[in-house]
Length: 383
Ligand code: FES
Image 1 (cartoon, rainbow, N blue to C red):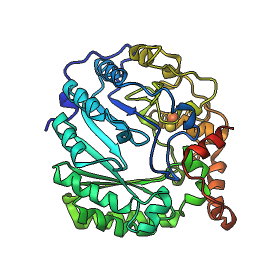
Image 2: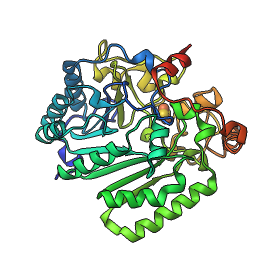
Image 3: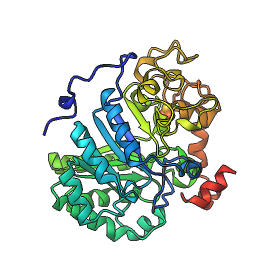
Image 4: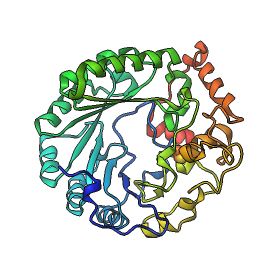
């Protein structure tokens, strides 16, 4: 199998000297699950109407390919709620994309997986939640525990590499060893233990979801030991949560550098959360070409490079490494989209992170009801 980079058929670089190598198609915000940690926007109910048609998605795929896109993630919501994913996959595959379906497994049937195989789908990423039915069903607001195991077996039977994504939070962090054992028993080839990052619904539920630093350290040590034990049989990724780091991540590998998201209604975004940022308007494929969106649009140029930075980022010797961190996290926590990401210990806003960590140990806040992702709650948060 060729790598995505090998599949680049000499597509010209854009004027910005960057290419949207990764295209994420968030084809719908509809979802049968109600996960408390979902990173989708809490106001997604505003964006559920006017989903792009099959033809519009196919045009997006063609245009993004011309700009250099190589990797396609098909995500949501739950992408399988649309009945045209087979057509989208087949077109993407014929255009030379490396295609990845990111799914909860709900709606994946023998018929559909066979059609995906025939259409050239490369990769399926399945979300799992815990080893217990109780926590799986609680955190997702659904009875999907048994179904997910069946879907995992189906993915294996159809010859796909088994990629499990498990979001880690206070409710399942004590089960990391058992989760890894379950993944091994299911024949997983890759496991991503993705510690919750706090955007969207998980930010609303932050005090209820956040584990302690000690729990994260222990989970990482267990993961390292498990990695030693299984060797190359199962590749395990442990994604360290921002809040427990001293330096921020280079979010999206740099704003407008390699990553482009097209949302269900056609908005073109440089990152998952960009629509939370104030005073910005984003291009939409119904009105603007993808080329203009990527190369010329004010939104994609707003935080490219480092011209926008102010202190302490501007004179920081590490600024190239992290580009000041995440713009959305900076705005969501400090109210200033151009501030250093508060995760950074050099940020004047670092105390906001430390307070959030402390609040997550407050029994009163921990006991507050969780706001699950659903249409009613989304409408409530819009009001
Ligand atoms: Fe928007 Fe990090 S999620 S810049």
